[in-house]
Length: 351
Ligand SMILES: [Zn+2]
Image: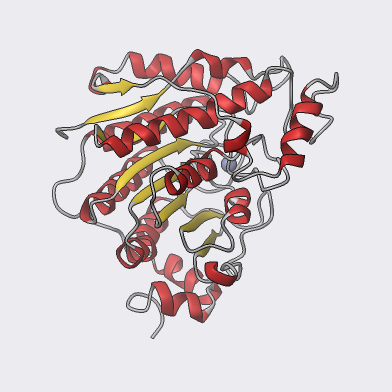
């Protein structure tokens, strides 16, 4: 058992972004999760922290002012889909989205005090699809990007690693940090799935060249392949980039029971992924913060998030073991541009 507390953000305010007709990105996702956490004695050491709303100024550090204005305008339009076909907006939505991002920033501040080594912001709406000037895919403000920018601006950090294991590409986060090396974005996602971006050749620009890593995986990849990717690529990136903080876009929609994708991670697989990340963070003395993104099967979402929380509470003693999955290595060898292999994985992949 870890000596330190695990911080979480959970709040009924996140139920207030809702539409009667919406079944996918709905309040039940977190309502059910909060109830299940309460009933699990093993999670009793979680400490819930208060949250706040982000300001216009904080939003505009990663989004354009025009985009913020568009969101505020469309939120009062009688048609909730006037802005985007998936991303509904109601009069309450902008404020709930400010609290969702603000919960993540509040937890990041606690993390930086050293009071906790790791935390999980159990917030919604999610954020990783929200680009500089455009929201989509249920995302209004980019929670994880705002958190990374806050750590740079307010806490003076200069190396932040964002690992996005949501089954969809984190296009918004990529867009926001495409030209910087202060934030390294690494997204593992199912190929040819919404938002149809995230090719392995998208590797960043300018100062950011080599600091945007995409690992698109074919359908049917599951625990073995993900374990192999974490034990090779992700470990190499952590050890070579040496981030001060690891932020995780934790979406649970790659679960075998989540019908939004065809990948097959099990609940035990999410436990293993979280243990691996916890081990990586510990090994380089970095702090670790999970932020909830997708996950649309209420049952597998609740089970998998709780598996992650248990894994954070029980960091592995010694190195976790990783599985060898030849088709995972092959997928990367075949797809990755040589400069990315040279930079981040010379010892594991290729020659
Ligand atoms: Zn997703």
